[in-house]
Image 1 (cartoon, rainbow, N blue to C red):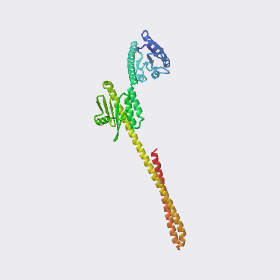
Image 2 (spheres, rainbow, N blue to C red):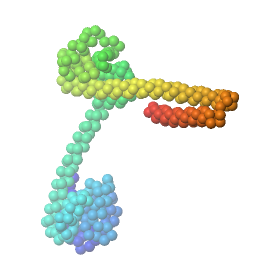
Image 3 (cartoon, rainbow, N blue to C red):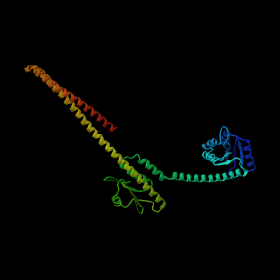
Image 4 (cartoon, rainbow, N blue to C red):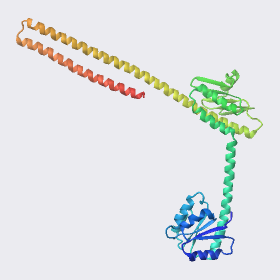
Length: 374
């Protein structure tokens, strides 16, 4: 890219005439406008390589014009050089902040402006070269990703096992994934004292099971001939047909296999955690059910006891009312007996109130336990 088309923006005709005089007869195509809005209106049609933009203009200053140019994807790559009568550090920092690439202070000489434009030419050529390198690298990366069935299969596997919550299904899915790489494999998943073996044929041979047991302590990776054993804490994998005579592919597949075993072990841990939580939830549910049954039994017992007490006191009161008059007691003795009976009844009523409070407490506990299971 070269600097060919220049757009000069200044509200003073004299300044535009100076720029025109300097660039006359040079290799530049020049167009001039006298305001920020005029610049924004013409820039999409003219497509300048560089805009010489005055800072101090009425209605719309150069900083605001630059902001709009850099915010528009269609004009953000146009080089902006501010033209200002002030060249303080603050002015230059403001120009940099809004996205300008260069700054020139009025009054400037013919050679200074030409020099800056030639410098911008080199800047644009270097920028174009770097952009081409970025585009080439990006294109290569995207092509590699698009053409990599291996990476695509790994991504699909990670997504699939995220929905698996059974150990058997996880082991089978791992072997199917490796089979899509053209690999013959066997797997061992260890859960506590239980060991699960997997093969595409459905059953691991005794020699494979012995190999898993013998090589557990041989480190994370153990290679022999076309075989590769990968050992993690709870997952081991034995590959039977690694690409022995293709070193680059061999290394790539080995890295893929290690990653697959790693994510499989993580999902196995998630499965075990979920099962433990489900078991704990069931235990809690069973405990709550037993507690609720005991509460109901206690409340039923309290109801029955209170009813029996009330019946006993009613019978006693009726019996005394019929018998005391025939006992030949004096009035004080009769009052004494009636008072004792009445006090006893009142104490019984107080106990009944306490039992009702216990009932309410049991009901609140039952409600709290029910919330735990929601």
